[in-house]
Length: 474
Image 1 (cartoon, rainbow, N blue to C red):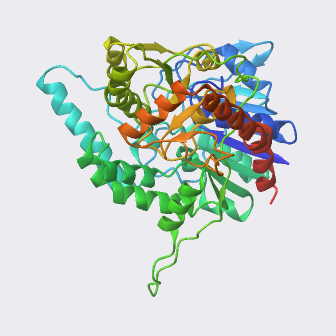
Image 2 (tube, rainbow, N blue to C red; image 1 turned 30 degrees about the vertical axis):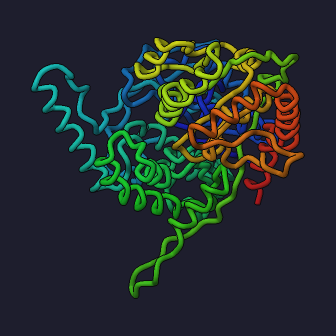
């Protein structure tokens, strides 16, 4: 079977965030059984060596420049020519007939400059910059209102990648098209569903996430999100209707999408949206990257790990540092917290100035830090979908205390003899749960063993890959 996988996020190395981890591990599994053709976008931090390594995992790799990154000099590797050219300007609607196809091969690195729809970088200083920023925001919102696609989806759209995908599908060179994250839906044309299986592996609902942030008061910009919410609902309904199947990571996300996509009362003369089947396929863990701990370190040490420029993780890190840790330190003055994760924003870096808190940023092996902690806390308050950070801590054998959001999609509450993590949502619940683990070595060991066993039986990438493979052959 020939599978065309589309990912605007470069999926290697699989350690930069949840999207990369899920995409890489699924393509690695599928490549062992099928011919995988991957189209992806190169961001500034992607190296030539990483492109070379990723190429070893797929039958064909096409890499396109990010539309907001200036072009680099053309490259040549081992007799393989990497083409350079000028990409078409951004078009108001990407659903247009294909342009002249670009040359492709086992590996093609398309170099060129896209002309995005967004205004140039804004000048942050002075009145003029502030006015330009307001105009830029208004421009982006008006485009969203008019064309129905969010700015973050449009900002990474590559016309060259569209041309390449169009040519492959039109020529009948693939049997399945998968979008590895909902932002890639922009490349899939509605008519493709009539000739190939099209799958959107969405990770989580954008409408549901926005609604949750407004409901919980955790939105950074409530006015903006209130304006965006009906637009996101319209957008998600429209793009989902293009696909043969939708994949979510948890039953909660599936229920949200079904709520959104349920056909309304029929209106004479109007056509209903197509409602595709929605399957649940969770995330997994690479057990070689997260081996089980050799000892219980004991002590009063906490850890929270995740990309520290991601809004749900920033909120969780601040909630843990500012509201949960202080009362815990009243009981245990030596209690410490380590915040691990790439790209910490200023709000996270500032937490390192507080007593007992260390911000370490990106690390080579997260598992080594998990093994040094007595408890891993995952106090997520926003963000749907299964959490890699929770699964990874469970695989490493570090006892977990987490919120409903942090444990979403995980079967950790199977009765007293099957509990794999402790659940907490309020500050006092966190304090009591963490204290119980600090005080009780046997409880720590029981949670550690059960969590690892659960991951081994349900959440390895071989198990998850097998589920995805079956769905693509349905």
